[in-house]
Image (cartoon, rainbow, N blue to C red; front, side):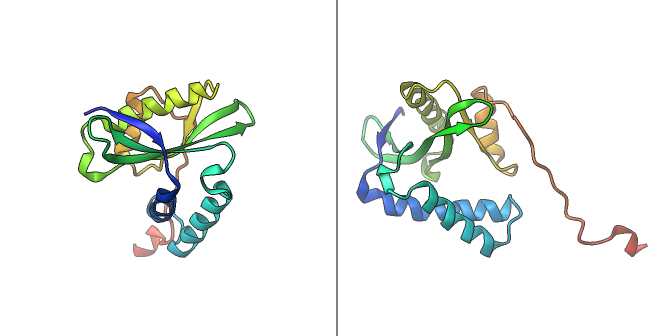
Length: 166
């Protein structure tokens, strides 16, 4: 099965955003340590900030991932043009998701390579992303494509004193 990217349509936008906010808030809570209510608030704020003009938001590129042979939508992806302090303008992957029914077939890898092509077409020479530590499937995919970790945030819950139980 081979896939292509096509621009997300306006009639798909609202459902895409609602789904994305739910997953982003869940990741922030489960893997980022944010309390659920604060994760939900941050998700609402971030998506509104990044997509104020919906699909016409400057520098934002949202796609449906479709199977070429059938045209069936199997996922979606979002990259943005971002200015960074040290690397200049880069493509930043905000989201890539393959529907659970189609996972394990290499479609995520194909979609990432297509996003890299999109970034090159925009004149960008670097692509970056963030991935939560608990998302081993995604981290493995990115490593297989040559992505390297630039920073790793770590934390530990110390709310209980281990010496108190002695």
